[in-house]
Image (cartoon, rainbow, N blue to C red; front, side, top):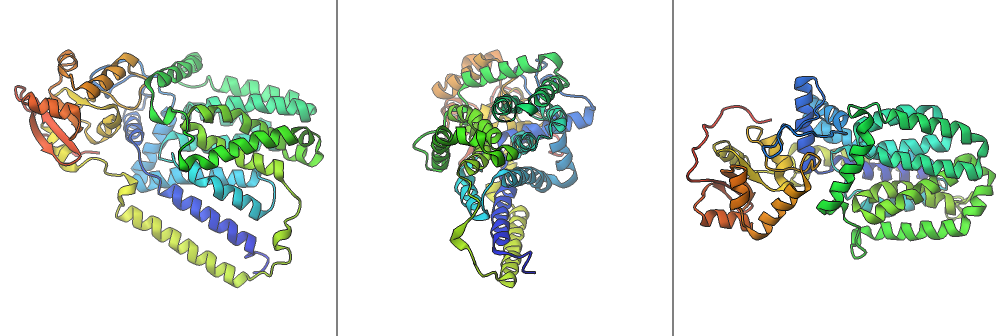
Length: 476
């Protein structure tokens, strides 16, 4: 028992139990729901969804759906085990990513524990059941394969990744960084990596988008920058939760300036691929500085990079520390029971943090009697696509099918309350909006009828429009 239940194993187990609990309690977001609906439609039709079918504003417009495989997998998990299984699958991807990072990080258990514990709160801020969590796992896997020189597997990973999520762009940047690092430290491996990288690029074209994959990704990123979406805004220096990010960013740059040359000449570091992981982390730093959404991927690689730069063979702090295997085993068992109990309670209740019921059921019942067409904000569109399938939305978080001008027009309506022109153009007779919004107040003054109202939401119908007959069809 003493050989297994060491103090180091206890620390590792406690750390990963904490990561797993945080991952398994990740809340659903608006994007979670339209991803599920898209997956549901593809399961039903047995065809990849490449045109909009969820809105009345751009219905039938091309939708470059580069996340189609994630949507199919997510809905499959939901169909098999509901939101608990979907969240567990997403949480397992995140936990697996950090386990790969743990294996990549050199140094003692306690040094790795300190590094990982320091950043995990910042890294977990954007975890949710979305394709991004799959990209975290594949990101860590690609770096592990690069460091272990298992180049033959890379094209298969990129084929899978390109159909899962557009963050495969990061994967290509990692390959470029690895080529530079390999050229500096392991030139004998350069031809094999170059060939594998070329195959990876070709693999990304094996998607339903075909040769337009990369142009569609570029256009999507350009639209996002124009829209000013919050998670794509630069991380703030004043945000307390982002302090670990800024500390590691500065530390990585400083340590690379100081130790990069020595690292490239260190035989053991070259064997471990330390320069490669450092180059990969540095490559993601500019992306993280320009968009908060990219902070978690950077932190995922910053931990092993910092570990490689400050790695030591020994840890003299607890040298000769007396092992207590029975106590370690008991603490491990208690921690595991508490972790499982916490997750089980959160799923059984379910707690508000999970966001599994983001809209009141009575509001959705009222909405089913509301005449089409519907007006809603960008933020709630994803919820309504799933919870109110009888209505086509005005807008939602997919952004790719929608012209930038339409999104900006919706923002203008929300800011000014001047709804008449937009509502007339799209023949809107129903609205699902926040109860305290400018639009809701203007609609009420214009004589619209509230079909539902609470402190958060209001469902309003144009008094002059005919009501819909409420359907008994079950909601998803």
